Image 1 (tube, rainbow, N blue to C red):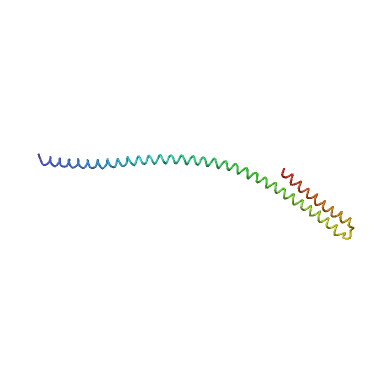
Image 2: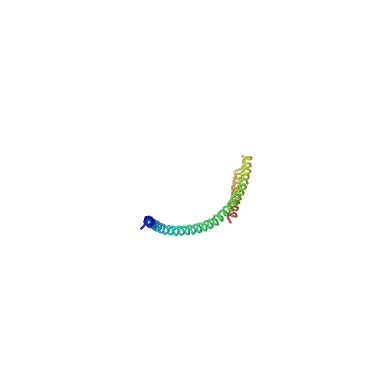
Length: 149
């Protein structure tokens, strides 16, 4: 054999051994990738399940929010109506209170203007004050009852 042949065979043998070690290294790397691939697939499946649960939760939350919004809208509407009714009642009550005060002032002015009136006259005036108060009070009660209905 010639030196050239030996040199070529040694070089080929070296390259063959080198390729064997490289293929073993690649086989290990491929097994790691295969194992990681399974882990990634498992992770992807878990992520998909979590995403589906989140979507269902968001849909449920949206439905609940819409239902609460409708109920709150009704409550706010009723509150506005009640506020208007209360405003009306307050205005009527103030008007009636002014009338009562006016009647009271008028009746007191009559009693003070004639202090020397007879006992019968005083009793009649006190009775008229009581009756005027009760009439105004009755009017106020009637107005409040009408507002409730």
